[in-house]
Amino acid sequence: MMPNPADAGLSADEILARVLYRDGLVLVIDKPAGIPVHAGFGGGPNLEQSFVHLTFGLPKPPSLAHRLDRDTSGCLVLGRHTKALRELGEMFEQADVRKTYWAVVEGVPKSAEGRIKIAMSKVGQGPGWKMKADPKGQEAITDYKVRGSYATPHGPRAWLELHPHTGRTHQIRLHCAEIGCPVVGDKVYGRSPPTEPLMLHARAIALPLHPKRDPVRVRAPVPEHMRAELEACGFTGDKSGDKNLAGEMQPKG
View 1 (spheres, helix red, strand yellow):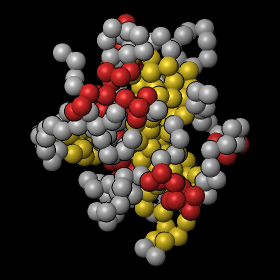
View 2 (cartoon, one colour; view 1 turned 90 degrees about the horizontal axis):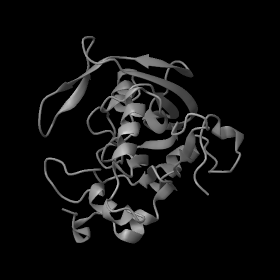
View 3 (cartoon, helix red, strand yellow; view 1 turned 60 degrees about the vertical axis):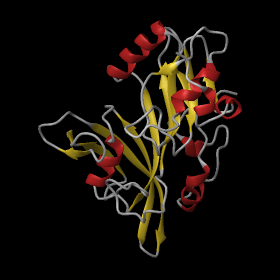
View 4 (tube, helix red, strand yellow; view 1 turned 45 degrees about the horizontal axis):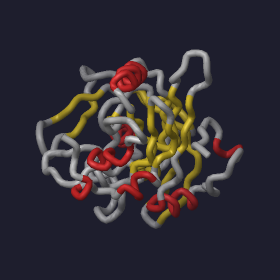
């Protein structure tokens, strides 16, 4: 049964305006912060309800190929049909998808760049669950680079570019906390005031959809709730060909 568009968190115009890339296999959309990708324990509006507006001539709406947390913004990949979802599932499972995240964190890592390799496991079930560092848990690896920093009355903050090599739940959030630099606005693993939004953005993604072609590369614009903090750290805006965006990927159009 198709979801009722009237119950969705985003209207047709809103979700269509967030399409970053489309072809016969996949869609990449710019997920807004503050809305879950699918129904959670408490129900309520979710992004999946709006996929009914993204059929683009196919008989069924697309489906999620992976997940982003409720308060994380940026590149979210959807498969347009069963075959595409199967192929995408294999890509994500085999870590063939290159993901780039941007975060603003409390403090500055001791090293300007490095690799975080801390295994993880889940604690609890239902509302209130979280992840913890656990040597016996699932392997989790994240590379990071400090892109800039600035001083605040409560201590420095840094802009990190992060590349997860594994796809564990809350991986970046836990890894940043474990090196002493929790993501600003993280109510589970951080120490920011409760009024601050989570400053974690799925900035870019590269999908190797065709063996003999370059990966499909998509970049999501910086969300407004992170712009001031990033600019304080040295971000100067999205510019085509900007050399300060090394390692990142360009959006459709």
